[in-house]
Image 1 (spheres, each protein chain N blue to C red):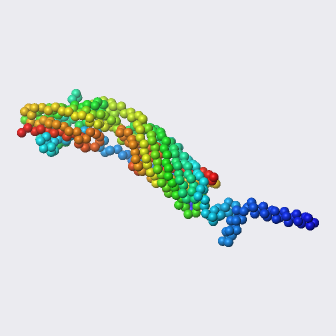
Image 2: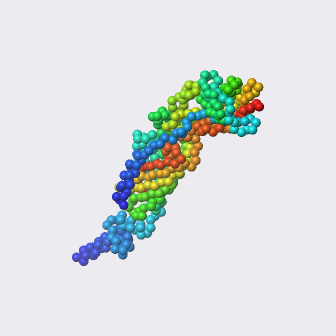
Length: 246
Length: 168
C-alpha cells in the first residue's frame, strides 16, 4: 500500500514536471501576464503575447507572391505582365521588396493600324512600411517607394505612308529599336490575411520617369514594368502573398 | 477594421479594370520645312512686295501660288527621296519674272509619336544650295541661304533663312 502511494506521488510529480517543461512558454506567458488579468486559451496566443511582452524579433520571415492582375490583362488590355514579388519582414513594420517580371505588348491600334511589339524583363527594388497599429492581426497597410529599371527592344510597324505631294509609298517598318528606362514609384497598398500564411492585397503606384534612352525614331509607347510611357502614370497590382516564417 | 479591409480589397480588384484613355497626338501633325525671308543687306525680316510662286522640280504641282506680302512660307520635303529641288519664281505687276532654284538635301526618318497617332516622316537637312539669276533681269534674287534648324518636324520653327538681294 505504501509503495503504491509512493509510486502515485512520484508519477504525479513527474507529470507536473513534464507539463511544466513542455509548456514552459505558455506558463511563462501566463505567469508574467496574469498580473494584468489576461488569460490565454492557446499556445500560439500566449506566444504572441510573449512576443509583444519581450519585443518582436528583427527578422520575422519572408513573403513571396505573384501579381494576379497582370496575366488577366493579356485578354483585357493592350499590354500585360507576369510579376513575382519577394519581401523580407523586419519587425512586421519594414518590408524590403524585390519585384521582377516580364512585360509584354503586342498591340495594333484600330484607328492608326500601327502595331507595337515589345517583350522584356524588368525589376524593381524598394521598401514598404506597414502603418497598421495592431500588427498581430496579420493585415497590413503599406506605403512605400520603388526604383525600377527595364532594358528592351521594341518594334513598330504600320501601313505604308503615302507622300501627300508625290504620291509615293514609303514603308513604315521600325525593327529592333533599343531603349531603357529608369523610374521611381510611390506605393500605397493593403494586404489582408486570408488564411494562415496566405495574404491577398492590392497596391496602387504612381510612377514617374527618372531617365530614359530611346531610338531617334520616337519614344516607346509601352515600357515593360512601367506601363504607358508618359511622364507620370498610375499602375496597380493585386498580389497573392505567402508568408514564410523561417 | 476587418470590414474596411474587405471593402478596400474588393475596390482594389475592380479599379485596375476601369480607366480612361486619351489621345495625345500633336494638333499640328503636318511635317513641313519652314523658310523665312531676310534682307541680304540688313539681315532683317523681309516682307515680300513682289509675288512668289514655288513648284517642285519634276512635278506639275504648285506649292505656293503667287503669294504677296509674305515673310515666311512652308514647303513639304519628299518622304522617299533625299533631295528636293524647288523652283522659286518671283514676279511683279509689270509681268516681269525670274526663277531661282533651291536644292535641299535631307535624311528621312520615319517617326513614331504614339500608337493612336498617324505615322509620319521627319527630315534632317544635311545640305542646302541654290542658284541666283542676274539682278538686271529681275531686281529680286536669292543672295544666300542659311540652315537654322536641321530637324524638320511638326514644330513651325524656322529651318531655313533665305536672304534676298534687292537691286535698287
